[in-house]
Length: 189
Image (cartoon, rainbow, N blue to C red; front, side, top):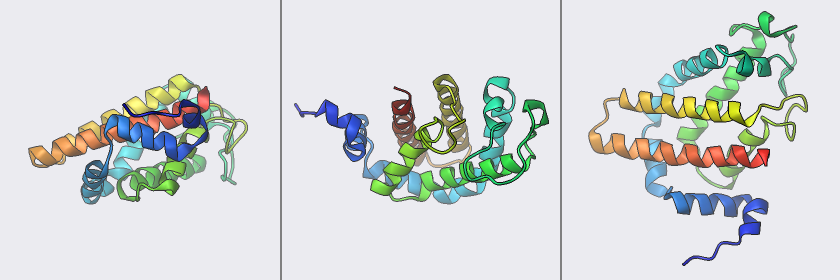
């Protein structure tokens, strides 16, 4: 039986990631599968980003979080939820961040820097980082992660990979998104 320092899971991000990866079984073979899918997934990133924003804008509970100024955005801010469209300059700014995130998922080395980035993805949706006015409820983050997971499933099934590669890629993304979800949820406790 492996001993886990439970207190350390809350204070040492690398330790936490290592524990999650080990427990879930996320390893080099999974990273290779994710990287192996990069060439076919990268061209699909713009359509994935558009699908995510279309979904986010179809509910007032999710769309309202895009009205306040986003961290790093210097342009005009919409007056209210009705004045915000998917073509707004601030949404283009946000879409570029999501596109970089998706690209990074499939191309980055899964090292300390990447783990810190995945953790920041969770933290930036709370007042703990980025904009102090941004506090996306955990239910909205869970809904988004579920939608992103489904988008990856649909996309991977549409790639016409051989069965073995398809299964490895699906399993790898499933494990990765569970780890990402933990690195989001931890900032809500």
